[in-house]
Length: 123
Image 1 (cartoon, one colour):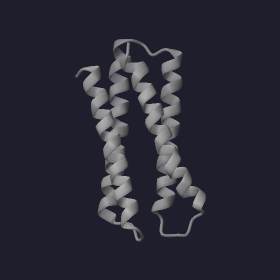
Image 2 (tube, one colour; image 1 turned 180 degrees about the horizontal axis):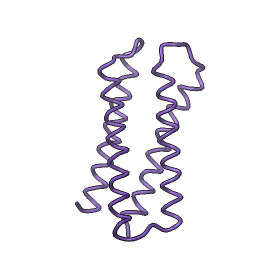
Image 3 (cartoon, rainbow, N blue to C red; image 1 turned 30 degrees about the vertical axis):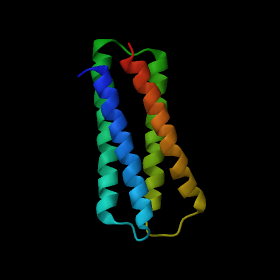
Image 4 (cartoon, rainbow, N blue to C red; image 1 turned 60 degrees about the horizontal axis):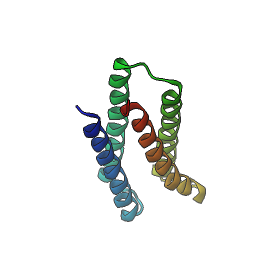
């Protein structure tokens, strides 16, 4: 698969993640289990796709320091997104800051993923 195709697929994953997240938030509480599951599965698939893409590229050419840093930042952003989403999915009351974090961290995840793909696929 070409680098362009991989970047397009990653972009489609992120578009689907954001659209399903907006759909989920618009449905209100209690969260719709089906939409929530779909949102989580798309996110998981995107993470796996990125890992496989990075792994395949790293087998061709070893990763340099900048690429490793980008991968680390992206991984931390993904974990923050998953953690804040997990807290939001519980039925217990939570501070408004958790929602704000879950609105900001996914954007950081998108940006860091784009940078990672730029570095890794651009070689």
